[in-house]
Length: 152
Image (cartoon, rainbow, N blue to C red; front, side, top):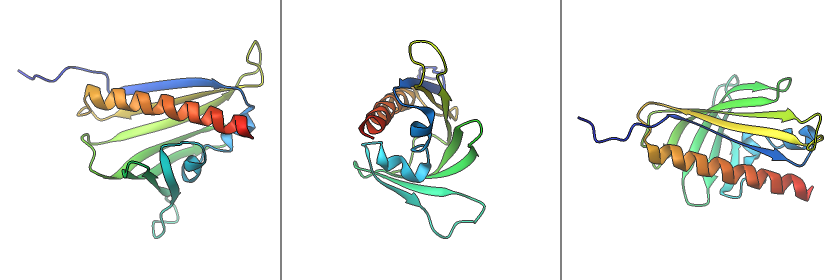
């Protein structure tokens, strides 16, 4: 019998950001995440990968280094999907596919704002701690994104 607590292996966080879609979407490029996410020291394209593959290295202020691969990108539907392909230190789970989607809010109290949704789908070996950490980091990054566009 397993002592592991069953948990969902997905997480979705969202925020309404008080800025137009164009201002928010401009920052949603993997190599530019350090412009808004305060936990990142730097983010940049990895040289020497295939010209058909976008790989970006994220170096966090705590020393964690991730290489993320852009899996999908749509300037029409305003979303990107990416996966982690390497991590130092190593991750405790096999894989994660994350997607960030942006939607213009076109009516109501928040008209002119942007609804941003950041999801992650983890492999089945991710435990509850991984999911909660991902939830916290997404909330924090969305708050950072809101602050970054407010400064412009």
